[in-house]
Length: 251
Image (cartoon, rainbow, N blue to C red; front, side, top):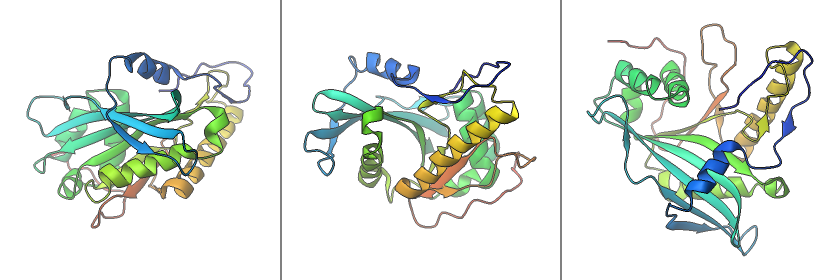
């Protein structure tokens, strides 16, 4: 999550040259984790690989009934032995007996990130209709060293992973067009100048995701129509209905 601090005079967004906190945490944890799977990225460089692994067990959401669970997938883009990028995904495993209310309460009580995801999904789909087609995939974080950003190697790695692990098996993939590799702690994002810069950056990320990941726009989340949450989606299996605003069934 991006932390925002309000200043009287907003400044420009600036890119993080070093690793964001979330990436540093994963780097520290990588010493104890196994990344048994790898995909070659030889179309970019013959020394480049994508190595990834999953958490050992699914995390139950809300209770132990098993109607909603998730598992994290963490992968590193490697140039030889050097880690130059990271991709973090969340696999949502859902029972076909799940209801809108159960899914929302399960997602809402776990974390702000899962709550936002659950709200975005339920705003446009009945959860059971997706669960009957397949599980859900969420793109949580993408980070790449600046000198490798122009190659779009992160997109090549993610697309290969989608084809290998999710295409034809999961129902949809969702992504929040948040400026992952930018920080907003030097701007007043609530002011019109800060909001304008923030929205320009989010628009650029959304355009990039549509171009390199084949993502599609979703209706804005919320009754006001304010696009504070810029979610995009991509069907991974046939039969997924297009997202449309709906009334959530709380029964």
